[in-house]
Image 1: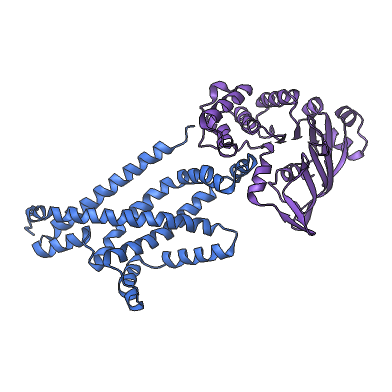
Image 2: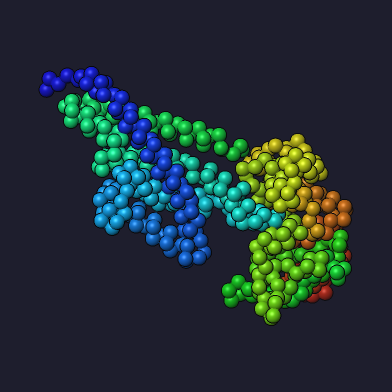
Length: 220
Length: 256
């Protein structure tokens, strides 16, 4: 064996890794924000009595959730231009991840909406609130509390999916790590450091979400 | 104005093929306290829920203060009114539910304030003082900042009543408000309702508390299989039931 770990080459390129991590976070933030809006609208669609809203929502969720995200990434970047839709690699990846997270979050939100007791909506109606007031003041705040625990693992999962952007040469963390790997031949060291950065970031994310969960918990 | 606060004419309600209300007529004047009794499935809760449009109904009409509730008929076609209009009409009545249905993420005061701010358009501080006044009235002044999960069933139901009353409804609907309570918590809720009745609040109560119905009501309605089986003043109804069905029902219900 006789392999001696030597991190110095990786440390010299550490800035590059951090830049990659920053881009990963940026990609995740933009994509998931769009995904949340998409997921929420889709969740209401899934629960709608009107087939016109329910069917498209169901088709969207089914197609996206049953396609590997890497295939979606490659399709958006390589196949869409053939159809005349040309996006930069970052835009292309953000669009894909947004679409992908929207489908997953739609199911999470749907569960959260179903868990809001019907009696509370009736109580809202009984005091004269309109449907939209009930949605904003009663249903959404309770839904959010219902989904926070499972949302945390979904969000972390989606953040890690940004590593797939490396497949289309978006210079995020995994892409940068691979570059350093090739340049320095320090395979083990590079991937250890990259993994540590992912673990650290995800842990911080999880801690922040736990804190939010605690802050929003209902006193009892 | 007909002079009647509530006027129900030939009310019909179906769930699919099952007709649960088969032509109910009922009028009530300002200040009346009417208890609706009857076995489960007789349609009493459904009737109550039609009055504030929590249930749709297929035939007949309901008027509150002369205003037709829920539907309008133009050129022979009956149409459900617009959601906004129905919301406004719902605010004419207040309702307390069997399961309280307090908003769990809001304190007692916030539960009462929500309708005042969103429906009545009050400023928050104004709504807060109205909420405090009513929570005080139901004996919960000190618990106003507690959340529903921190209150007993009886306290939750009293908050729910305060939430409804604070909206200043013309008519209060009580739907088996003590059925989900532990026996020792029933009285505190009934006392609140009695106080409201004494103050002249018009109320329609679906209840299984026969003793309470006897004491508090100006009139009692006995529902039987989707129709009004018998109605009259509580003394006559409970002591000299005219129909066999009512006599039987009273025999099986506890009168304590």
